[in-house]
Image (cartoon, rainbow, N blue to C red):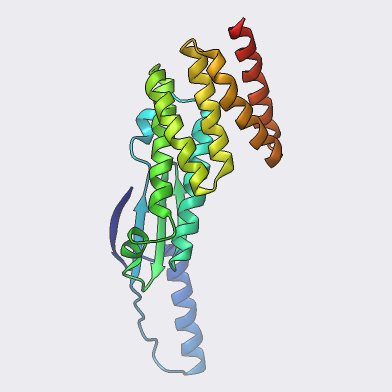
Length: 216
């Protein structure tokens, strides 16, 4: 969620900035050059994070948390850079982006036709499904994973699509519907095999074993 937009004139590192200014003053004085002129620049600062991340991450699987953070960070960096900014830092789920003299950065991101807002919504859907599964609300999680699967497929992110399919399989097993679980898990396995994602492929195989045992 995009939260703030404003102007800052704070140097990135005050001590390094102070030393650099003093060195420049001394150099100018030795050469008998013109007086040092102050220079101020306007910078746009943008902050974004995942809504509900702290509460949801406390009960979610660490691997799911890491995967969602990775997807969130990659999407944020890509969109900020496309619109003329740079990512200054990541702090957990929070991202800080800056753009020199670009006061319209936030507006450009909000109006972006490149799918930034769509992907953000899909990330929230996936995250909500993961949190619901961790909280034992498997019917709600199943609905969320189904929506996320369709969305990630349309968006063109096969890795997220496959993980959503695995989520469907896990929920269906817990809900006592292993026969239905086999189809999404097999689909996920084919995607992971195509991507060469060995750890995820092993996870899919383990879940398929669970599906077979539950169906007996």
